[in-house]
Length: 576
Image (cartoon, rainbow, N blue to C red; front, side, top):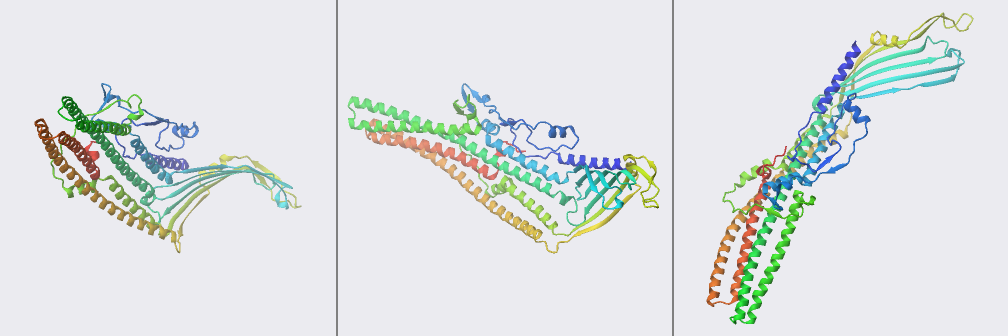
C-alpha cells in the first residue's frame, strides 16, 4: 500500500502545480468591446496535465488552424444621421478605441508577456521518461563456466522515471525498473530471471537556490515584465488617443478656416459686383476694377485650398476610427459637433502638475517597474555566488522472480554438469511482491558540495546586474527630468495660446471696426477702393487667426493632459 500512496501524493503535487500555473494573471487591456481581430485558436497559452481530456485533444487532435480573420469596423452605423457621419469628441474616441488597428496591436502584444509567465513555470513541470528494450545476444562460449557451447541470451529491460523540481527547491525522482533475462546457460538458477527495482531520490539545496523565493524568481521576473508591458501599452494607448484627438481638432480647424474663407469670398463677391456696377455707371475708372477682381480670384483660391485641406484631415480622421475600412461609410461626409469653446481662465499650478505627471505617467511607471526587476536580478545573481551544498537521500527496494531450477551442485564428481533436482514455477508477481514488501531495502543519505574555487561567470553576472540597476536608475532620473521639462513647456504653450486667443479677439474687433469705418468712408467718397479692400483682407486674416489660436489652445490643452498622464482619466478611458 505504500507505493499507491506515494503515487497519489505525486499526482496531487502535479495537480497543485497545474492549478498554480493556470491561475489567471490580470493584464492591462483597454475596454474595447469589439476587437478587430478574431482567430480560430485561443491566443493565450495553456498547459493541460497529462491524462486529462484537454491534454489528449491538444496533443493528438488536428492542429488548430491559425488563419486570422479581420472583422469589419464596429458601431460606425450608429452615428450615421441623414447620410452623414455625425461625431462628438466622446463618440469619436469610442470609435478609435473600438476600431483602431494600432490599439488592437497593442492589446495583443501583452499576450506574449502573459505566456512568458507560463513558460517561467516550466521549471516545475514533472517529466516522465519510459523506455523498453529487447536485445538478443548469441556468443560462442569461451570457458566451461558459460553453461553452453553457444550462449544465447535475451534481455528485456523496462524503465520508468518521474523527475520534478518543487517550489521549495527540492528535486525528487521516482524510478521503477523491471527486466526479464532468459538464457540457455545450464548454470542459471532462475530462467527467465524477472527482477524489479523501485527507487526514491531527493535533493534539497541548503545554500544556493534554497527556498521558494529563488526557485520562483523567474516567475516573479516574468510577472514584473508583464506589469512593465502593461504600463508600456497604456503609454502607447495614451499617445494614440492624443494623436487621434489632435486629428479631430485639425478637422475642426480646417472646417472653421473654410467657413472664414467662404465668408471672405462672399464679401469679396459682393464688393466686386458693386465695383462692376460703379464701373457701368462711370463712378470709377476701368483701371480700378482689376483690384476687386484679383481679390475675388485670390479668395477663390484660398477657399479651394481650404476645402482640399479639410478633405486631407478628414481622411486622417477616418483612418484613426477605422471608417476607411468600411466601403459604406468611408465616403460619407463627416460632421463634427464640437465647437471651439473659449479658454478657461484657470491658473495652472506648475509644481502640482509636475507631481501629477511623475505619479501618473505610464512610461515612468514602466521604468520604476524595471528597477524592481533589477532588484530581483541582483538577488538572484548574489545567490549564485554561494556554494552549492545539497542534502541527498535515497530509498529503494528490490524484488526477484521467475522459474527456479534447483540443482544438486554446480559440477558432479566426474566434472560433468549437474542435474536439476526440482523446478519451482514463478513469474513477475513474485518480483512485485518482494518489491512492495520492501524485504530488500536500500537507503542512504549524504551531502554534496560543489565549491567553485573561482567563479568568474557568477561574479560577472552579479556585477552586470548591479551596473544595470545603476543605469536604469539614471535613466529614470533622466526621464523624470524630461517629463518635468515637457510639463513646463506644455504649460507655457497653454498659457501662451490662451493669451493669443484674447489678443486675436481684440485684433478681430479692431479689424471689424476698421472695415465698418472704411465702408462708411468709401460710401462718402473720402477713400478709394484700395483701402476698403485692404481692410477686408485684414478682417479675413483676423478671423482666421482667431480660429487658429482657439484650436491651438485646445490642442495645447490636450498635449498638457497627455504630458501629465491625465488624458485617459479625463476621457473616462479605463485600462485594466
